[in-house]
Length: 433
Image (cartoon, rainbow, N blue to C red; front, side, top):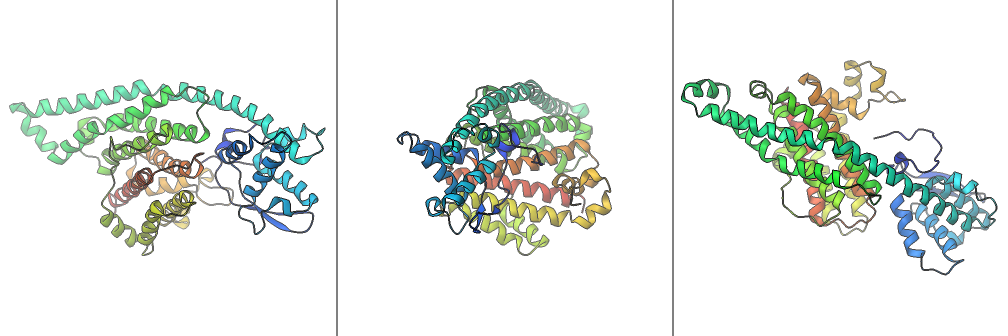
């Protein structure tokens, strides 16, 4: 994920559009009261705008400010905007300006004396610049990611050619003993699976190339960038391992599981990007729950219960269960990652300052590199890092999607994608245990 830093929030940057929930901030009002200001996202403010757009002129400005502030104070004991004093309300508007990131626009409107009206106009001003930014970004994403489409088609053809050559060789009497001595049936099955798992990967790559309008929202942009980077890394890895003699000696974690991961990612990302109803044209491939739970329990006895709790959020009737779904899955993945790559072990493994944050904690990518340290394959490690970051992007898409209308089937697909990622980590660890 990108770092926000201390940069001022001018016209909304991509990082600001996509920023996640960084937790509530405490502010003291002129009256001495303390409130908690939760983050404001693009989708939230746009939904509030829609709810007041048919209000009478002169009212909508006040209603927008009131509803935005009340949503911002959703984690405070007191959130009724009108119950605050005029002095406190003025300060709350300033906090909303800061949280939403329209300080520049707000400062340009000093001729407007009513803070609610000034806030409303600042939001509208910023939206014009935001629309332009999204349009330009969408075009840039399309140009950058469409460049991977042809190589990906080439990869699929190359896979098919490799498979055909292997089958042709095995059908020749003179060469059959040599081939069978190097390739057992399981390896042949894996090559066949890799070929069969390509269609959804190609589908999402082609879908990315089609999206060239300003209608691409921030969540879609985040997913497209993440998937595009993962596909590119996957392509590089597969070109590295495709030679038959190399493929045969590599562990399953390197030669087989990356394709399963890319297959699963493509299926889930396609539905998030399209925002269409979930259809089971392709199945997300996940490990057996019993085996995965046993492995998790061997790491920490509490992990199976955490996994079960994360799954239960799919069917929860809580109106906020979308956010709980994302946070519970992220929490478990963080615990697993920290246990497989403890701070003390990672610090003994690498002293490179670029592997740590300003507090001396290993970056998530550093922990993943530590977990895969024994594989000694840079293209594989690069894919692992991008694949895990993509998993996080998919979970963040659940939390930040503007219209929270996921079906249970879609959440189950996201959950199975998460199980696949855990299975991938288990395979990496066990292949060198």
